[in-house]
Image 1 (tube, one colour):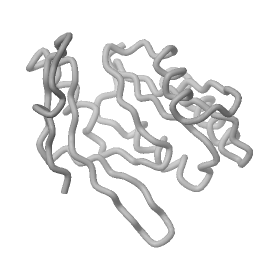
Image 2 (cartoon, helix red, strand yellow; image 1 turned 90 degrees about the vertical axis):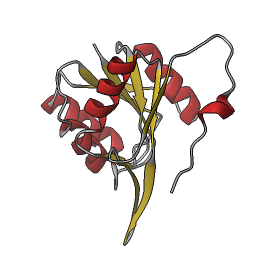
Image 3 (cartoon, helix red, strand yellow; image 1 turned 180 degrees about the horizontal axis):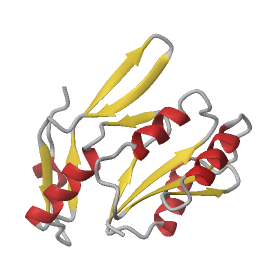
Length: 157
């Protein structure tokens, strides 16, 4: 597996389908998995997750844990992930169709351990989400045991 998209889910019934649809629409399909961690949702999020997992069993895996916060859910997702790279997305995010392909291609070309890109906060009527824009610069670096993160800062616009 090349890339695992890890998505913590908690009471996001209004945004979840859009997020999952954006994962399904990725141009890079081979070697990609989506790991959804239901963090004890009490709305219809678990039903939406079940529907997508049944429709895309080779692409989407769903785990349910007791509500313990987004950090715990992300860590749980990392434990279940089989990808060489992990892309974190929030359940109200939506991804541009080529973001996984562009980030993975950049990582492979540079032999990078970490690849990051800019994002835009998008607000549409009652929908708030984040769209990851791949036309913007992509930053990549090799991981070293000790490095100054300030060297890798960039400005978000």
